Image 1 (cartoon, helix red, strand yellow):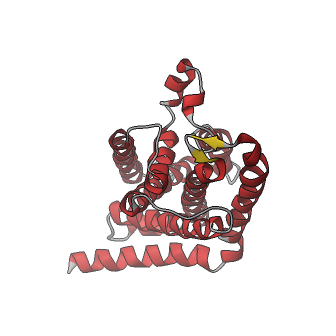
Image 2: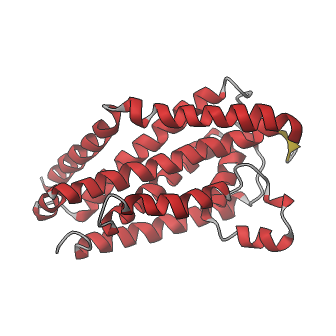
Length: 257
């Protein structure tokens, strides 16, 4: 009986989160698709023709997985951070916490919404990429696994940002000054093999590098990072953020004043 109540609570939160972005799909799905289409036109077709090949691939084929991954990361993150802070601002997150529902259920509900948006945008961007590049998948299982793991990771990262945010301005600081630089330096537009040895070593400290390269392996069968190492790094980050999120929710950090 208790498990059924928890399941209903989870479905309620997840449905609310999914409905939140699907009812305004023109604002949540279309803009990232248009932005990535511009990346394909400018970087793929125009600049890519001058670059030629990257890692043995036509440049536009090289950047395609990274652009899809960038869309998954940003949308998974932004969906949860804005939704959770909105729940804090309207104070209905407090009602969730005083209800007989474990914080684990609340966490999974918000993360599901972030994953749903990230994957939805990822699929839309992948379909758009068919207009610019030949579609091929080296390992569908790796593509799906990395997409799901990455969207889970950044959904939880967005929740942490939402917990600590004290104003609407605070939910844009991390995406602007941390997430965007890490994404652009995560090997989307270049192979780290082009960098001097010192900067290659520095790049290994960027977690997004492992996600982009493992995702590229799933599509193209090529990666700058060993696949097992990349997956291990992603799993470790997920485990750390998962525990951190639960601890913050249990303590009521940023919620109980």
